[in-house]
Amino acid sequence: MSLIFPGQWRFSIPDGVQPIDNDAVHEFYGLVERIAAQGIRWHVLETFKGSFAPAIGQAHYRSSSESWAETDLRNYMEQAAHNPPLFLEAFHDATETIRQQGGYVTPDLRLVNKLCREHNIPFEIDPPKLIKISSGQEVIPVPPVPATLEESSAQTLHESVIRSDQLISEGHFREAVQEMLWVLESLSTGFRGVLLPTGEVRGKYFNQIASELKSANPGTPLSRALEWCEQLHGYLSSPTGGGVRHGADLKGGITITENESRLFCNLIRSYVWFLQSEYGRLRTSKHV
Image (cartoon, rainbow, N blue to C red; front, side, top):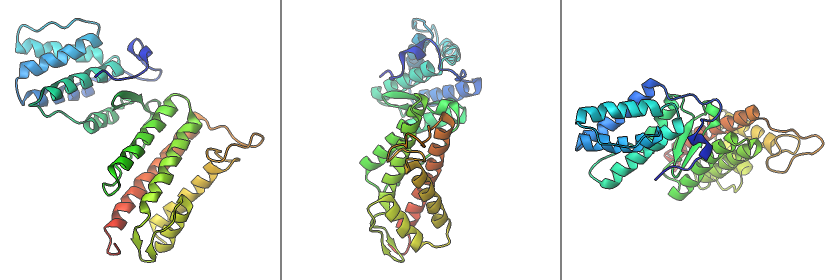
């Protein structure tokens, strides 16, 4: 059940990463108590102790009382907070152990990852991996792909968003932008078949679909957002621009830096978020 991440993180945290603050530790412990309230509290506390003890280099011994189990677990969690990857791995492992035993409802990963974002913990759990996101800088969240898309397609797009974050953390800045551009292009195909005042969307490619959507929604925020999408898409596709689709101009092209990669990825994220919202609106409009 242990998460997969660079082995060196077990000994030293990545550059720029800070220990998990006390407020976050308190909230994670609060989740433990909510699990424990559903059954045998002492058992749940000891299960979490069993995961957090190795994270701080200690053997796990059963506490002499339920009260001491609480005290010991809090102490283990506070010590483990100095290494966020080990803390998150310990919490995830204990939660999975409890879940598999049955009889307990445990927090899902969306809640755990939301807690990380709220407390600026620059990691996301995407089993079996623990991913470092954007070197601790906030990224624009992308909500779930609308349920009207096939579940497999939604999962594919989500995995590419996560992959983009990972590529940035690994220093592959052009590839990270390319991954997000792929998400934008792929998401646009979800509009195919949507019924608009001007007729059904029939385009096969991003530019064709964007053109149809603009024609059916003149003077709207959707039309303006699509114009910006097309400009960014064109720049990133051009050999003398981002060069992520048709190759870079070796004489006049540019090298995408880390900050530029984050800028482009976050811009695309914002467009993806907006287009997903518009997709839901158009699917439920009177023209369907």
